Image 1 (tube, rainbow, N blue to C red):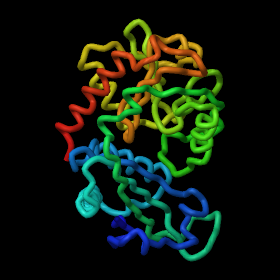
Image 2: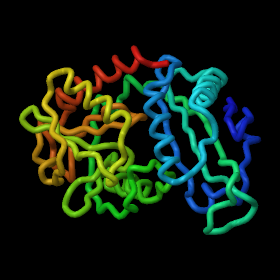
Image 3: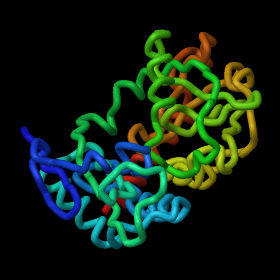
Image 4: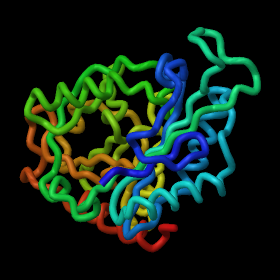
Length: 286
C-alpha cells in the first residue's frame, strides 16, 4: 500500500512527494528531526518530542514550521490515514531554501520545510530482538560537538551501524576521550551490583526522551541510578547493559566487544525497565 505523507501543508501519496533540490536539509544537512513511536494507534511521549524539537530549532536559530497543536494534528492524521497500530512517525524540519545553494543562511522570512511520514512496525512492543538482546562493538566517536541538537547529520552513526553489522553485531557504542558517549541511535547504560550507570546530560549526547522517562521510572521503582562518565571496560565487566531510544524502548545488551554479560541473556533490570516503560507508555499515550 502506498503511504500518505505530509510535505509542507499537503497530504500526498509518497510517490508524489517532492522537496526542492536546493533545500538545505538535502544540501547541507541543515535540518532537525524527531521520531515518535506509536502503540495501539496512539503517540508515545509526544510532548517530550515536541519540546525537544523546539529546543533543536532554537539552538540552530531555525523558525518553527507550525504550532505544537498543528504538529499533533498532523501526526494523528498520518497515523489514521496509514492505519498505523504499532510503528513510528518521522518528522523533519529543514531551513528550507530561497532558490539556490549557498553557505549563508537563506533570507529572513524563508519558510522552513516540514516533512512527516509513518513507518509500520508490527511487533514494536513484543520485540524478538529485545527477547534475544543486542551485541555491541565499540568505535571511536568522531561526530561534531553538538550532539544534544537532534540534527539529520547521521552519516557517522550510519557508518557505525554498518561496522557493527560487518562484525556480526547489532550496534555500536561510541568512545570519546576514553569514555562511552552513546550508541549510534540510543543512550547507553550498564548495571553493576544493582546500580544503573549512564552518562550525564551535556552537549556530548542526545537528551533522550525515552532516557528521561526510563530514569524516572527506575527511580520510582526504587532502583539506584548514577549519572557519570564510564569506560567501555566498565561496561564489559558489568552484570548487564541496555540502551534506550524512541524506536526500541529499552533494548537489553548481552555482549560488548566479544565479552558476554551475565549469562548471555537479557538481564532482569533491563527486562523490568522495558516492561514498566511500555506499560506506562500505553497508559499515557495520546
